[in-house]
Image (cartoon, rainbow, N blue to C red; front, side, top):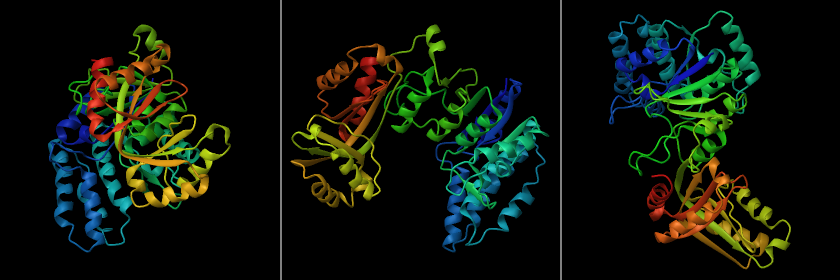
Length: 440
């Protein structure tokens, strides 16, 4: 068995966390490939190294001294080196970075140094080889990963190395320039590596013991999800659950590689297992019909009404074309017989809402257009819902019982999710009501 083990920023925040990582790796010989994020927060009001590097670049850009900020970064890594008695030549590494620090410095190169330096220290501490992500994570110019070139470059590395530490979050463009991924991109690096080496399991170590049924900031001590499908996770991630970068799902899903979300600070907890098909696990431990509840605030719904709309071809397409002309992505499209709603993020339309309405009127000549602002979308997700008739009715009845007004309703044809739109003021209340009625 081969496992790829990715450790997030909190898992590598200081020497004590490094020691936890080492115990985890040494407890299982199949953990042969390790991906690390940049050093994260040690305590609540601490700084993430990546944030400090972004701040350094801003200072460079505007000609302000970055010295105090960069010194904080140096101190973090020197402290880890000293506490663990490591010999990595950090002085040389920092001198290399400083030699390139000017107003024209690549922001991608600078902010990638957090992962790079963490990777160097972790490789020495574990006794693993270090493989710079820039040596095999190859991007196309459009920002997508070139899996063929990545696979080929990695195969050459694996001819000489069997246990590797890889820094996450970045790779290179065809011209050799460093390119970073979106924040949280180390998750993606781990998934790409798992895909390329055909790993048996991709472990994602963080500071929570798996994925929780609901946001712990809203629900006190919510249950842990023991197993979840890729599709369920995609639904929850899109609607706000952010334990794992949503783009990290695709590389492992392609090869049906399970993802195991684990807690570095509680390594004996089995966490959450994410799989293409959970049926084998479900037979041993049947899942709750609701897997998770998540949501996001601040949406605007445009509701278009027109008599006999269902008999007219192309009306929805023409309305969506209006939004496309403004380069506004669509979040949800609940529909009825003579009406449908287009739900979008409020921030995307706040400066053009009246122009949009005018263009929709010109395009489809509706009987009326109404807009509803300050909406929240909440997704109730569960693979077990398909086997439980009447779930939608129970959800709506429970919300009505608690005087929560439902503005929009949408349910996927695969019946793994129900999305309701409520007013922002009812966001937390809706999640509590759903949790207490169906989970707690």
